Length: 373
Ligand SMILES: Nc1nc2c(ncn2[C@@H]2O[C@H](COP(=O)(O)OP(=O)(O)OP(=O)(O)O)[C@@H](O)[C@H]2O)c(=O)[nH]1
Ligand SMILES: [Mg+2]
Image (cartoon, rainbow, N blue to C red; front, side, top):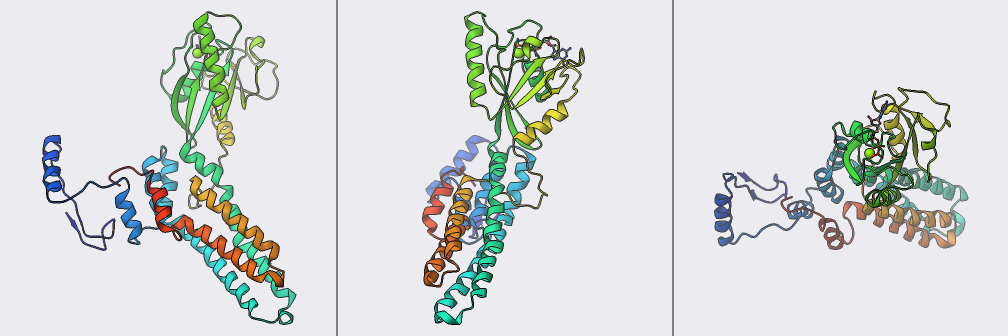
């Protein structure tokens, strides 16, 4: 299939060969191509060429990788919006505002001091705050959740033996992953299952019940349980409604569940969420609590999120320059300094789109790409 420039993915002339599925045939085809002087693509080379030929801006290219990595529909949708250019447009809008401000500040440089009314500086300062600083801050506030949407989180289930930790894991996973039995000390290893909470990818870990004593294997299980709890982003402590001796957590947890409330509703501290894993009661509430702890922000689907560290770092850098510019914007003596800080902020924002030290930025971004994209 021939895709003539500029209407191909890379913007160049592209020929796509579709061979039969047989590995032998494909290898023979590749051999022929190599003999004709073709070379295999580097990781991300197609997308990199698309950027170099102006088909995509850099944030869109990163979105290609994000689409591939997305573990849930929700993260996929966010990546798709970025691929369609939503983040790029938003950043460009802020950069346009900055360009206007730089022009106004530089225009002031040409006037003798007394000619510029103080009111003018107040206006500039307000524009800087409203049209630039606040939108950048708003974007940054989405970063923690945005990154979580792609990186996911680890949740550990902890508690005394026999309280229903493995039953909870199975209920959340939707299948019998862990062995459940009424023998205390059933689980020894840490068992992990991937699932999602409100579209956020989560890895949940079931652990051995904590108690004193036990044989060497069980004690090793408890050691691993402690480690899993320490490494988790969120811990769920499970207690047994029938057994008050299981209600006291050894360490602070994020969410406390009182299980087996199908048998009895005990008088227990308020921070416990009553559930019955067996009857599947209270699990919705648990999901909401988890989403809260995951920092879920209820944004409409057309809101843009900052979803990667590189963007967050550049936005923080932008904000630092902007804060310095704000300090000096009313000071006529320091107009050139203000203009410089505003230009620095513009440059940092431009880094998100791939404007600036292009080669350096491209190398960094495409280092993480997979081959064939
Ligand atoms: N009535 C009732 N029984 C439950 C409930 N959840 C779990 N159980 C029972 O409690 C017993 C222990 O369940 P597990 O899930 O194996 O408990 P665990 O906390 O993983 O136990 P260890 O692995 O030994 O630490 C089993 O017999 C379960 O069927 C519940 O909501 N109600
Ligand atoms: Mg268990």
